[in-house]
Image 1: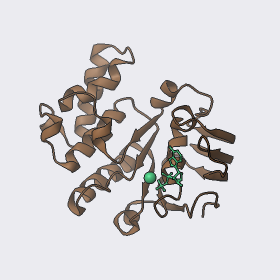
Image 2 (image 1 turned 180 degrees about the vertical axis):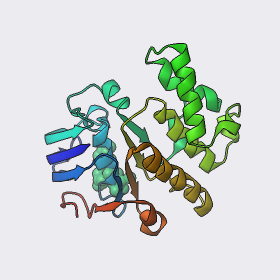
Image 3 (image 1 turned 30 degrees about the vertical axis):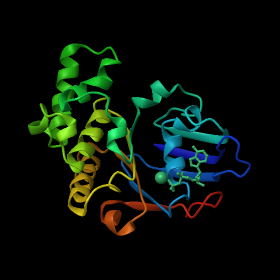
Amino acid sequence: MIAFERLTYSYPGQTEPVLLDIDQHIDDGEFVLVVGPSGSGKSTLLRCLNGLVPHFYGGKVSGRLTVAGKDPIRAQPREMSSAVGFVFQDPESQFVVDTVEDELVFALENYDLPQATMRKRVEEVLDQLAIAHLRQRRISTLSGGEKQRVAIGSVLTLQPQVLVLDEPTSQLDPQAAEEVLTVVQKLNADLGLTIVLSEHRLERVVQYADRMVHVPGPGQPLV
Ligand code: ADP
Ligand code: MG
């Protein structure tokens, strides 16, 4: 599902690459945890998967990357967004409209799908994330864990093959974190969705994943 082949990347104006000769394969249906200290390159690695690196961040990239049969380095970000769902650390940064239901519809509206298909997908996602009871709520009134579940829902409506989450629980209390991680694990088990999730507090997430990738620091090989 994901293949990094000697991928090297430097941010604009940086002489030392953050990612150096990365070789990493992730199978279809795997739940992989990306761990490592702050500033080691976890977010950078994840941003490659949907083409945010290099399309949004710029910089210099070499080597190859394949995600869900596509090439994020060369494909248009729009093409990647239907294959790879990306959830940020701070769900607030991801919301565009006021209510839960509108937020779930929003991404779909850019894809020119029949009304009935959109309806069906929104219902499925509300169900999968156990947020159907929140559908009419204003997002600003939700708890942190609920917001993060809505953020996950809003990328799932596009039916991606890969779900990438960048420290999705870092701003949550332990109970809300568990609630979000349980939902992610269920998506992995029930839908066979490939999951790549980063976190710097290992103890919180280790029980949920199949495998761990350690990012020791900029320019250092993954373990
Ligand atoms: P992590 O997610 O593990 O905390 P990051 O991927 O955010 O690490 O950062 C890895 C390295 O890249 C750090 O040295 C950081 O300062 C640098 N970096 C991150 N984002 C940018 C950026 N937009 N421009 C320049 N350097 C960056
Ligand atoms: Mg990060």
